[in-house]
Amino acid sequence: MTGPDEIQAFGSAEAKRRQKADAAEFNRLRKENKRLALEVEILHKASAFFATRAVTTDSNHKLKPSPNLLEQKFHCQTPNTVWLVDITYNDTDEGWLYLAGIKNMATREIVGWAMEDHMLAELCYEALKMALGRRGPVPGLINHSDKRSQYAGGKYRELIGKAHLTQSMSRKGECLDNAPMESFFASLKKNWCTAVIPPKISGVQK
Figure 1: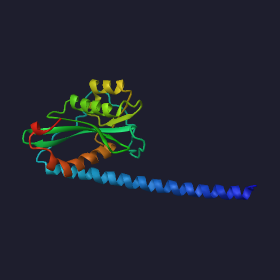
Figure 2 (figure 1 turned 90 degrees about the vertical axis):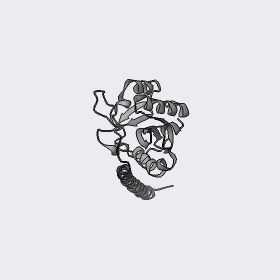
Figure 3 (figure 1 turned 30 degrees about the horizontal axis):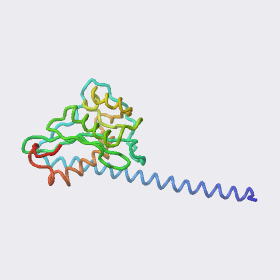
Figure 4 (figure 1 turned 60 degrees about the horizontal axis):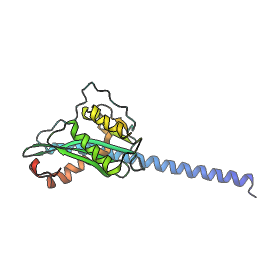
């Protein structure tokens, strides 16, 4: 029969094991946050390749923003519990090409997207429709974006409501609140857009 001394020794060893595991997880998350911060910095540097910048974020509207539910906690491991969404752009001979994307935070897969020569609410709406069509509505899934009017408007929120998703929004001016999506767009511009995106909008398959 196991005695009190053996139980105490086991409890002490288990506590040490858990402390070690917690410390390792803390260090991993700290390194991940540093990596994301560095990649966001790369995003801003990558923008210097463009002669002019398109303005994609307009949070100066009277629509009520949703609360920030993520608070920069990006260590989600369960697929289709958090989707990160955003808009970026690329210059073509015919003007700006806008891309709305939706990223599964756990798998890092782009589950929905839409491209147009404008950045009206329809662009974001179509990207979300694709994501829902490919992955299906997941009640309670967090749909995280910035505060731009396209995401705060009625049509987009109506689709979120019908799918029973939960909307979350970054704080104003805090690009790190959506760092993984910013990082993806930075890599897209640096490694893919200049080689794959055609010089004319009409050459893009939507």
